[in-house]
Image (tube, rainbow, N blue to C red; front, side, top):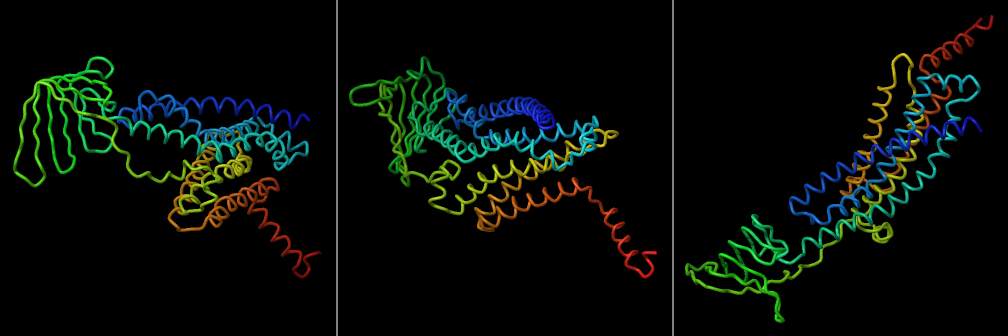
Length: 374
């Protein structure tokens, strides 16, 4: 059918172009963000591309939702501006008749958004968390960066190497501070190297001194050495920490419905419901006066998207804090939005206005008055 095919083709072109632009912007922003995390030591520089890829994959639901919403608003706004909507209305097509081609076009995208929100979002967050934990639990010597004071994984040692030669095999002007078993030790050396033996991994220091003191005692022990070996290895891992809710699968959150887990579930399910509601909102707000342009309409549509997305975050926070229930928040946020969007669409479809309602009321009052039918 010409009506359906023409709308879906234009929606596809607009959606593809918008998706490419938004994906490019998000990839650039995520790259800058991950590079900043790598410079602060939160992630490994070697894992920057992987962390960026997982981050973009996790936010793909938002990218697809915004691309679909912009495609609907921009396409219908152009049709209003070029008077195509007036032609369709004159041929007997009401605004509600546009809902069928919009849903047929948006249904595959909505299914992908739901799958991404329920399954891919926690998987991507879990991969990022694993990369960060693996980087945080690396060995002490692997954490050393020339020219920077670097703390060990357990916080009991501080290393400093002025310069190194080779991939972490030797260095000069070495400083080590250790706080273990009630003793504080400061060791400095002109140079050092890593020596792997059958007894373990050792840091061999040359031409330095060692200062040792006990907590609460004034005695200090000073020793100079020509060569001194320190056995180094990864610190003993502490007690395992509970995984953040955003890294847990949807099935795991459903099995153990904690407040934080329910808040995370509201966010995941809300992403899918919000995408469906935004289709109705996009159809309802797309109304352009050809004499005034469509920039204001696009601005209002973008504001509606930002407000709806912030509502998802607010609902997640309220559920996690116990301020509201999961069902009540989902019903109020998404059910209420659906009802308002549907009423606004019916108003536009039937051309309901306050002035017309007042005129009908005055007409009925005039007819019901004595002699009003004369």
